[in-house]
Length: 152
Figure (cartoon, rainbow, N blue to C red):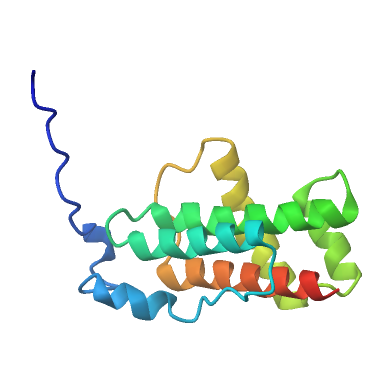
C-alpha cells in the first residue's frame, strides 16, 4: 500500500505582508464582522464563511475576493426573495429606492460588490483586486444590509 503524499502546511501569501505581519493580526482585521444571531441560519452561515475567507486570505490572497463575493450572493438571495426574479443591479436599485439601503451602501454594493460577484460567478476572478479594508467593508455592509432586511 502506498502512502498518500501530505499537502504542505500553508505559508503566508507574500501579497499580504503589508496588511498583516502574522496570522494573529487577521483576527483584528475581521474582529468587527459580527453576524447578528437574529439572521436566518442560512444567511448566518454564508456571512460567517465570508468572514472566515477574509481571515484565511492571509494564506491565499484571493480568498478575500471570494469572501466578498460570497457575502454579495447572500444579499442577492435576500433581495430576490423580496423582489422576485431580476438582476442584482435591478434589486439594488429597488432596495435603494425603497429606502432599504442607504446611498453609501448602494454605492459600495453596486460599484464594488456587484462586479466582484459577477466576475466570481462567471469564473473571471483570477487575480487579487481588493485591499483587505475594502473586502472587510463589503462584508460589513452585507452583514448590515441583511440585518436591516431581516427587520423590515
